[in-house]
Amino acid sequence: MSQSLHFFTPSSNISLPKHHSSLFTPSLTTSNRPFAVTTKQRFFTIKSNASSSSSDPKVLTTDNGTAEILSRVSQTPASSTDSSSIEVDSVTEAELKENGFRSTRRTKLVCTIGPATCGFEQLEALAVGGMNVARINMCHGTREWHRRVIERVRRLNEEKGFAVAIMMDTEGSEIHMGDLSGPPSARAEDGEIWTFTVRAFDSPRPERTITVNYDGFAEDVKVGDELLVDGGMVRFEVIEKIGPDVKCRCTDPGLLLPRANLTFWRDGSLVRERNAMLPTISPKDWLDIDFGITEGVDFIAISFVKSAEVINHLKSYIAARSRDSDIAVIAKIESIDSLKNLEEIILASDGAMVARGDLGAQIPLEQVPSAQQKIVQLCRQLNKPVIVASQLLESMIEYPTPTRAEVADVSEAVRQRADALMLSGESAMGQFPDKALTVLRSVSLRIEKWWREEKRHEAMELPDVGSSFAESISEEICNSAAKMANNLEVDALFVYTKTGHMASLLSRCRPDCPIFAFTSTTSVRRRLNLRWGLIPFRLSFSDDMESNLNRTFSLLKARGMIKSGDLVIAVSDVLQSIQVMNVP
Ligand SMILES: Nc1ncnc2c1ncn2[C@@H]1O[C@H](COP(=O)(O)OP(=O)(O)O)[C@@H](O)[C@H]1O
Ligand SMILES: C=C(OP(=O)(O)O)C(=O)O
Ligand SMILES: [K+]
Ligand SMILES: [Mg+2]
Image (cartoon, rainbow, N blue to C red; front, top):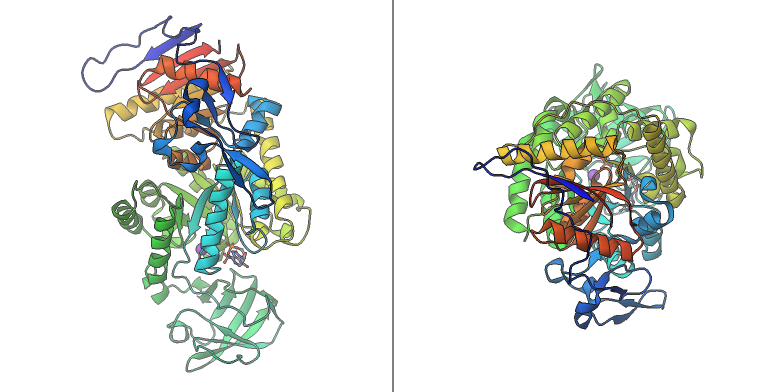
């Protein structure tokens, strides 16, 4: 049984919604022969027998010496991928099979990769643990190191059937300390005198000397200024300036970590002066961005965004250089200026990050929670994905169990329906990266379930974000479909989407059921990884929704991911339609 609503665009013949009770016929079309799994174990691609001639398995040897059979699909770019196959990441598939639709996690997880997690097996453990996006922070590590991490993530995806996206995060022009020559960290004690200097050292530097990356530093600070390391984890008072050297007395002791951020305060206010004149994207950042474009990363996160202008500039730069111009630009909200120009920045970007680490160094800490809530809400209204980042599970850098307060913080971000949560030091250099990821995963699942059980749908006003009539129709379709899905308690929403836009509109509604997003390109699929509640599949589909649905049902049933009788609502940006049906 199926019922469908169609909305025809563009301008001509806007007709009232029609009911087609027979659009969907449960019988399989001739193209849907019985299916055979042509790949082994972890790589989950299914093809119909009809096309088996083009899918001779290829044997590859992996790191640990086990032979895995990969279909040619995994070796070829999306455009030439066999049209009769469907791809979904192996973790989601296992989760769906084991626990059904309701149990899938809606909140996405981003892990910063660092020395603790850069090996192939460590990356695999994170992928198995639910990492949706791997972040590399260009503040740290060498070009070669970044390249190797990207290569390993790509290899994991190909060989093991994951769909982990890659986010590159720029260093930005902020002032920070240099590397500590030798030790991984240094402790500053109360009353000690330390020298902050813009001099470069060839030979070992004198004791208690810290290099600073910003040439204007010694000129800009004044005697009496307060110097905050990492937003106040350690504090100093400037007592004397001698040429390039700034002598400071430690007033709040603590651990100095390499490349820690520095801010200075005068009479209780953040000094921004020349620092504020530095470009958001530094010359080094542009080189990193070129590297990211060449490597085909999925997201570029821009540190210390001040206005929409820089985002627009970067987006046209990417569009001119990248083949499909499909790298999403994420604005990091971590400065006073970014809060001032919040709406224009979010509108210009493809997503935002609540970068609480630096944000908490620029505004009073007690203002961070309300800023977070505001950013998360605004992103949802404007249909941009949002990541809540920094110190979610900070104590797990050292300890295997989080504090109760950290669990409450994670819960709050999940309750706010942020698209994604991010681990920084916990996964980059902590002692328990997998455990930290497990905490994010289990807290997300529990809070999401609790929220659904309590039926606490907060009625968020979702403004029209489209600029054309056709886009408004898509929005209305998605809003209605999501509402119907909640009211009818359907098992899943299906969306067929070329650019991912229609899928994002469904995600924006934060419906009770999971959203299966079918898209024909691998890069769109990877980018949808950051969106709340979306399960992205790669599938070639046609303009004929009836055959798309038939084929999807067959493919998913053959994999045990849906079963006869499941109630599904399907929408598509091909036909601008809503269909309600039971899986035949
Ligand atoms: N590529 C890397 N190489 C070495 N250490 C790293 C790397 N990435 C992250 N780290 C470590 O993890 C910590 C937390 O990461 P992150 O929050 O991304 O950076 P930051 O502390 O500079 O804002 C860093 O301070 C650094 O010690
Ligand atoms: C995520 C952040 O940025 P970074 O780790 O690059 O400083 C932050 O400041 O919270
Ligand atoms: K950064
Ligand atoms: Mg930051």
